[in-house]
Length: 106
Image (tube, rainbow, N blue to C red):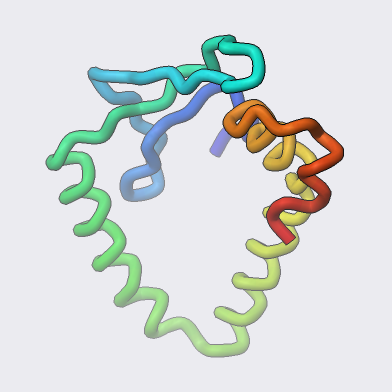
């Protein structure tokens, strides 16, 4: 999967990045600037994602607990490594000054 850039957003369905026919733009409430486009999912997109998640949950349940613990910690570390980027995105979406967004995802 490509690295996150917080400028291009897609659905992730069954491990694949997918664009949608329709997009929308949020607005930074502080500046009224348009934010990057985000996908508008259809009912079919959601149904396909749920089906893929159900399939994945079977494999996840069969994964030994120690391996699951390790993967959850790896995921948490990956999210933590992007804390500044998530914070910047939240600042744009909410229009708050940066000083009010100290570690927003901790």
